[in-house]
Image 1: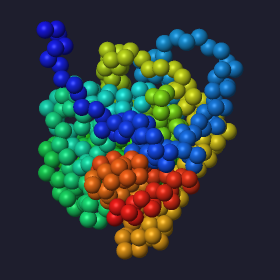
Image 2 (image 1 turned 90 degrees about the vertical axis):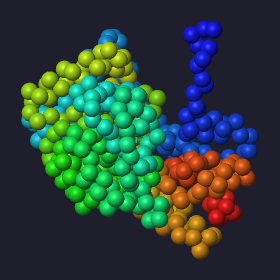
Image 3 (image 1 turned 180 degrees about the horizontal axis):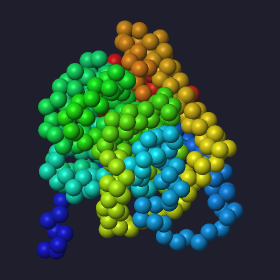
Image 4 (image 1 turned 90 degrees about the horizontal axis):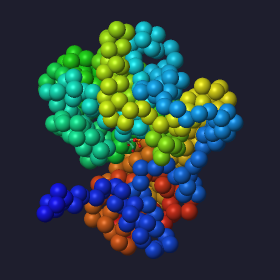
Length: 398
Ligand code: PLP
């Protein structure tokens, strides 16, 4: 027997598995609503013009490809901080926040998880029920016990806020609570400003450690509004962990651009935190890659490109919202006895559609429409060529 003889085949990633099955499907009408990627109305992943222009600028200034610092490109880290915390942020002025470039939002979460395991080894982690499917695996692989707090209420298609708050009130001090800063994945159901106040209050008073995951800044209400939750937590004091990603907001999925920010109590503490975070990076991948970070830093720090990005991001946000409206309106016309109005209340790229696993199976088998078993659909994958087909198929399985 070899070292590998007893190794079992690992289960396939459930969401990437959907795309594999979709790719293998020969039905010309097939639709993939299972993805976590923004598609434009032509069904293509956009290459933003601000990105193309930044790349042209970068190519024009030939630079050697040396290593970046361990914590990434300094201009990138600064631009990210200002985007996430606000340029006028007190935690930036007081040098209480540190930011390290990371390998996408996933890499940022993993850095935060490894850091926390080192300095809070006995804490437990709490994630929403349900959450992005990688949250549990990431924190478990860092060595944590991961629990769920109540979140989604299937009956109202919204947040079961009373149960969520009650659960926060019983968590031991020092517990790490992972929260989606905006555009909750997979449900599309977010807290309102009032509910966030109550969560911030209980997190602060019970000494919980908030970890905000912001993968969709600008996909909900807008860059500033979506960033409010981070700013409110920062104003409440540290410690605070924030992972953010530009995969969706810059349509730069494969470039792997994200960041981890940590807010500490004072600047001396923040400097010590950064020094330890760098050790974690150094022993993991040493330092991040250059290209994506340079593109994002260029766009964010050039007023003209920045304005272009905001326009392009707004167009993605508006198109998703228009898809929600159209989906609801068409379903109302064709299946008036079913109420899908909740889809309009949801935020970001996803909708928990309320379709059951059986209905999702039927859509796949009868119509080559692929969704996640939980009923999660990517609203950004709907377009003018497929929406009527999708609506007709949904009406058949209702
Ligand atoms: N967090 C959430 C909630 C996500 O939905 C995603 C991506 O789908 C990520 C993190 C990871 O982002 P990235 O692709 O930049 O690693």
